[in-house]
Length: 479
Image 1 (cartoon, one colour):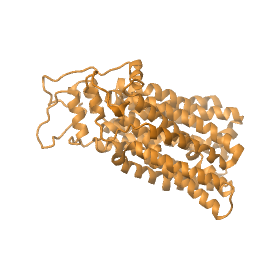
Image 2: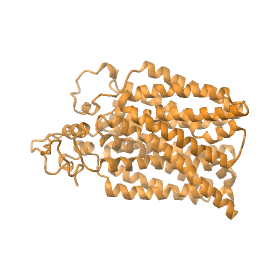
Image 3: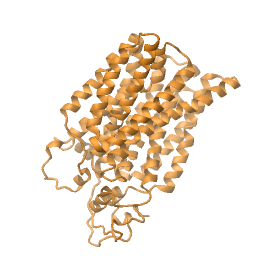
Image 4: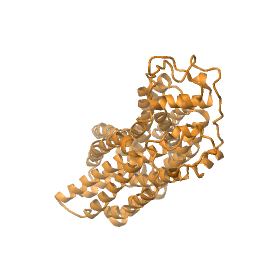
C-alpha cells in the first residue's frame, strides 16, 4: 500500500517523483492532499492523550496505593519513579527505532505496552507487580512520544508544522481533565456502594486499556507509514505506485544508534539539541512539581483537605487554563516560533511562582487569588514551554534524524520530571507552598539559556538538510 494514496497535484495534473526529497518537499509545500492527514493527526494526538491519562491516573492513585499495599515512603517513591525510569528507557532507545523501523510499525507496537500495563496495574496483587507494570507503561510512553511527534510533523506542511505539533499540549491537558472527570462518578460509586476507597485507583488505571485498544483499531484502519520516511527508507514505490520516474535516485538514510547520537551532539546540531534539552527539562520540572500536584497546591492555598475539592479544582484548572493555554500556544507557534513562545511562557511562570509563593500564608479572599495565580501559571506553562520544548525538538531535525532527536531530547523531560517529583514533596514539607519561591529558579535559568541561544526553527527548511552536501557550510544560527 502506498503511503500517500490518491494524492492530488496542485493543478490537478500528475505528480512525478524523482527522489525522496521530492516527496518531502511536496508534503512541506501543503500542495499534497491525501484525505488522511486530519485523521492521522487526531490518531497521533490520541497517543498523547493516552500518555497523559496513564500518568495522571496513577499519580492520583499513589496515596491509595500506599494504603492498599501498606508502603513505606521509600517504597512509594520507587512506585512513583518506576514509570519515569521506563519512560526514560523508552525515549532513549525508542526514538532510534522510530527512525530505524518506521513510524507505523513502532506506533502500533507501543500500544501493546499500554494495554498490558494498564491491566497489570489494575489487578496487581503486590507492589513489585505494580512496579514492573508501571515500568512497562513508562516504556510505552517513552516510545510513543517520538513516533507521535514524527507523524504530526511529517503530515503537516511547513507553514502548519509548528501549530500542528504544538496541539499535543491542549490534548495533554484535556486528557488530565478527563481523568479527573472520570474520578467524580467513580468516587460517588464507591461512596454509595461502601467500597473501600483505597481500591478506587484500580478502576481508573485499568480503564486506560479501553482507549488504548480503540487507538490501536483506528491506527490499523486509518494510518499509513510517513511518506517522508517511506521515501527515504523503503523506496518511492512505497509512496506512490504510478508516479515514479524510472531514473529516480535512491539514497541510504539509515544510521546506527551511535551515528545518530553523534550527529545530535555534533557541531551542526549540538546548539539545537542543547536548547531543546534545557527547555524540556525546565518545563518538565515545572509541570511535575506544580501541574502534577495542582489539586494539592490549591487545597493548601485554600487551607482545606477535601477530596472532592482536590478532584474538582484539578479538573477546572486543567480544563480552563491548561487546554486554553495549549490552544493559544498552538495558534501562535507557527507565527512567532517555539523559542520566543518558550521565553514568554517562562517569564510568565516565573512571575506566577513569585506571586503565588508570596501569598502562601494568606487567608480569606487572598487565598482564592493565590489559587487563581496557580491557574495562570498553568496557562503560561501550557501556552509556552510546556508545548514548545517538544515542538522545538521535532522541528529542529530532518526526517532521518527526527525520531532519534525527539527521543534523545526527551531525556530532559524525564530527568526534569524526576527532579520535580522528588523536589516538590520534600520542599513543601519544609516550606509549604512557599517552595514556589525556590522553584522559580528553574524558569529563571531557562530564560537565561534561551536569551543566549538564538536557535529557532521557524521559517527554516529543516528537512532539506537530509539532502545537503556533507561539506556544506554550517549556518550561523546552527552554531
